[in-house]
Image (cartoon, rainbow, N blue to C red; front, top):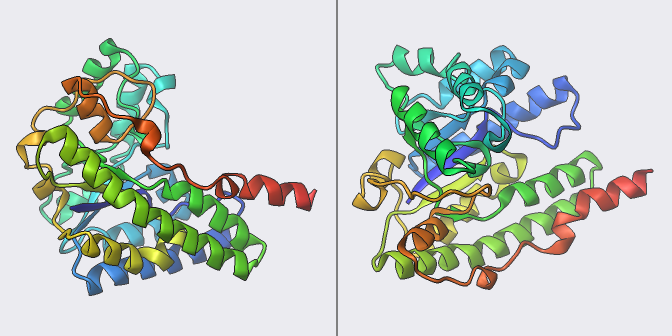
Length: 294
């Protein structure tokens, strides 16, 4: 299993002042990086260049920490763009501008930029666009980063950020526990889905985000993976499995995990309704507390 983080260097609920954002970015990444190093976990961090710019030198310093040893950088675009809403030429510009800091950093230590992950995992909502985007990635030397386990951590992270901004410590604890409970359900679900569709055990790719929530739960998340008999490898090692040689030729405006894409390509029926949704109270938490503020 490969661990990946999107939205580096730091993603928050968007309500923070820049000074607080900078402080919290440092604190969040300190905890994430410490856990990864202490647990000896390889990981790839996918970067949005506009988030680097917003943090200034702090953002560059954090990326430098992600460019060492078993940690590597990946491209997530200049903005957190939605490819469904852009032309292929605009998307190519997003990819190129996304390299502004990460390419020089990678090359400074003799590394290549290997992987690009589309925000929302939107890889083409028409067949023509899907093929064109695959060609653009190839042109710029990227492989498409997969996602085979998605625990919707961004929903829990948004709720956690809202509780954090209100200093609701009890709610933060409740949200953290709810997320770990959901991970315990989703990891074996996706494990079974992928084995059912592919007919064998396949290396997994876990999608997380560089959020406050993951800074405090990462150690427990890694424990859950170990309890499900996973060991940790680099993204390159995971995607060297032959199952990743041919990217799913699936056109969709949504961003489903690869197990669903493989099922569709292989014409294997799976019942997505069996996947448990994140709790409704998590999804509505920020809206409810905004209403209380008003």
